[in-house]
Length: 216
Image 1 (cartoon, rainbow, N blue to C red):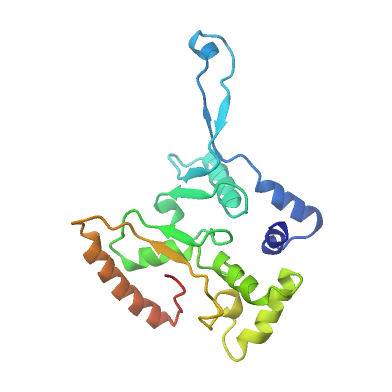
Image 2: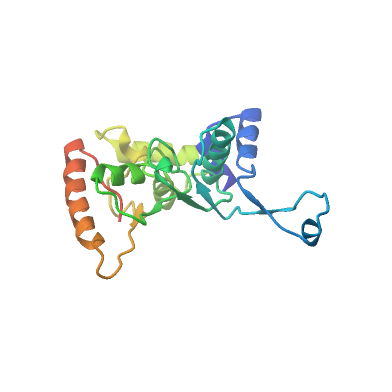
């Protein structure tokens, strides 16, 4: 696990140690009422960590909020907690969450298919988790992650663009791991019709850009 994370960070020496330490940073906590706090004792309330799942949002724009959200992003992009990220539209555009996440649950479907593409684009990026797992599945005989990707580049790329193998693999059998899109479908909901429309338009959009969908 740690060797994979070190490969993802791409740092050396002290810079690698500092980057790993950032992944252990506290991301969120809640103050807990105790007997002392109810009796009016002047004592700081203890904090209960909420590390398994955290919210990624900004109620107010401030330097403190920016630092907090950046800590959450770094921690979520590590193999350590938090493991679940619940976000508003602030986490939809221009942010990397791909290194240890390959599932996106859409609680509400957007009206614009580009918004759906942007949501999934946060985890469908360079050396994303799905790519890492597929590379390990096929080239695990190599001793290091650098060697695995070098072997994959020699074997898979050929005359194909540089997207292979760092963004996707062309052979479906060699890429059993997919990015997953989870959409809750409620009975009598309009989401059934909306989802079919979104997927149809999204397919045309991806075809126009020449992108290869590796989601399921």
